[in-house]
Figure 1 (tube, rainbow, N blue to C red):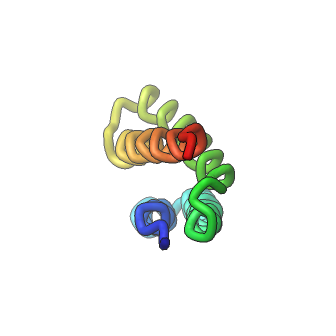
Figure 2: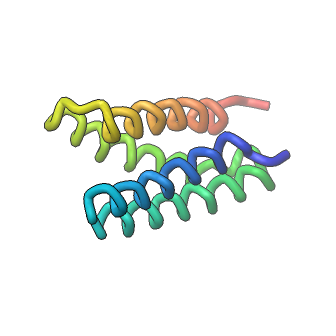
Amino acid sequence: MTDILGFGYAALVAAGGVMGYVKAGSAMSLAMGLLFGSLAGYGASLTSNNPRNVHVILGTSAVLGGVMGMRFVKSGKFMPAGLVAAISVMMVVRYGYRLTYKN
C-alpha cells in the first residue's frame, strides 16, 4: 500500500526548501529542503513496500522536527519553522507507533 502521507510530507519539505530559496534567496534552504525531502521520499517508498520499515522516514522527521523546533523557539515565528516542526512531530508519532505496534 502506498504511503501517501509520507510522500506528501516529502513533497512539503522539498517545496518548503524551494520556497525558502525563492523568497529569501537562501541556497541553504534549497539544499536542505531537497536533501530532507529526498530522504523522506525514500523513506516513504520503503514504508510503501514494508509498513514496518520506518527507520529512514522516522529518523528524517525526527531530525527535521528537532531542528525546526529549535528555530521556532528562537524566532517565535510559526511560519515556516513552527509549521514544519509540528508536522514533523506528527510524522514521528505516526511512524513511532508503526515501529512499536505489534502485529
